[in-house]
Every structure is written in C-alpha cells, then in structure tokens.
Image (cartoon, rainbow, N blue to C red):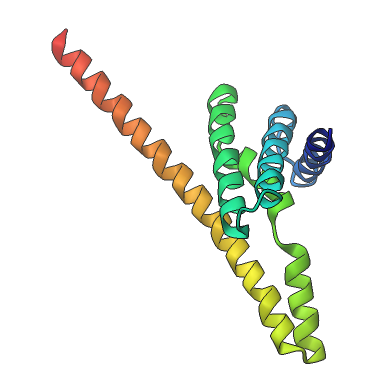
Length: 153
C-alpha cells in the first residue's frame, strides 16, 4: 500500500511539473508513469539498504528505459519524458540546507549536504548516460541485423 501512495504522489508531482514546463498534453500521462515508477524504485532501494548513489542511479536508469519506450510509442523526444520524471529525485532540500549552513558559518554541515547534492546529481547524470549507451548499443545491433538480412536477400 505504501508503494501505491508513493507512486501516486510522485505521479502527480511529475505531471504537475510537466504542466509547468509545458510538455505536450499527450506526454503527461506517460511522464507521470515514468516518474512514479522511478520514485518507487528509488524508495524501495534506499529503504532496503542501498546507497544513495546506487538508488538514484537505478531509479534514473529505470526512468530512462521507460522513457525510451514512451518516446518510441508516442514518437516524441526522450527528453519530454525524462525531464519531468526526475523532479522527485533532484536534491533541492540538501542544496538549500547546504547554502543555509554555509551562510550561518557551519561549514562542516554545509559540506556534508553539498556532498549529498554532488552524489545525487552525479548519479542522475550517470544513469542517463548509461541509458544513452544502452540505447546506442541496441541501435547498432539492430542496424547490423538489418545489414546482414539485406546481404542475404
């Protein structure tokens, strides 16, 4: 039941951000689904002993894979689905805390929160890079298959 609640709120947050960023209406539902599944993946992993980096990386990788599916199905750019879906994972609170701690002179706490921001942002970037690499590998494999088929006919 808790996963359903997390999925629902992440879905709604993703759709709301999609509306704010003016993505096409037909992309709102798939973006919400992408964001919901990504957040549930993150939530599950982080609450079952996985590291912050691995949980973010895995969630973004899943979001990227689902986004690829929707981008092909709806014939829309992948970024249309990826940008709204990562909103729940963006480390806004730690970034604010880091800035606040630095401002009041607690540099140790500031650097601690800054490291959370860096790790999270790096994991998000690495997840999208990995999805891009996997997509390119599959495209090359399909291209080679098509070339072999055309040679044999």
